[in-house]
Amino acid sequence: MGVRSFMVVLMLGLLSAACTPTVQLAMPNEPININLNVKVEHEIYIKVDKALDSMFSDSSGLF
Image (cartoon, rainbow, N blue to C red; front, side, top):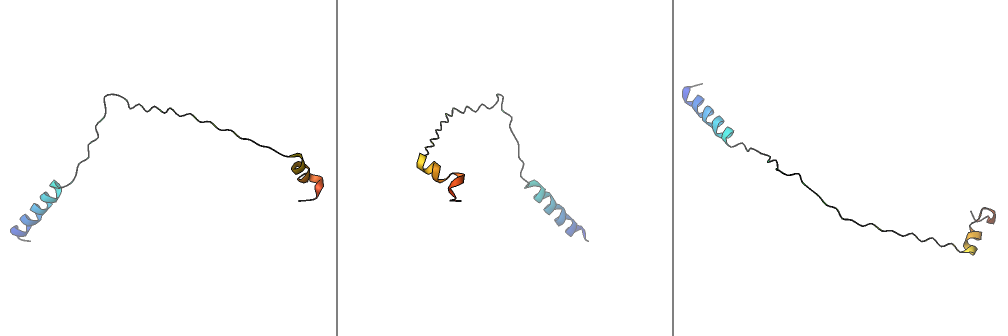
């Protein structure tokens, strides 16, 4: 390899190293506060008619 091709490879190596991105994380001075004001309400209504209850009973033979 000649001196000229060595210099070309060296310059390409330096240029590619100069283009690498850097990532810096900044730490905040105060902690991050997340306020979740969530109100969860649920209601479950189960209504069973006496006729349906007797129809689905074990002795009815339906199932």
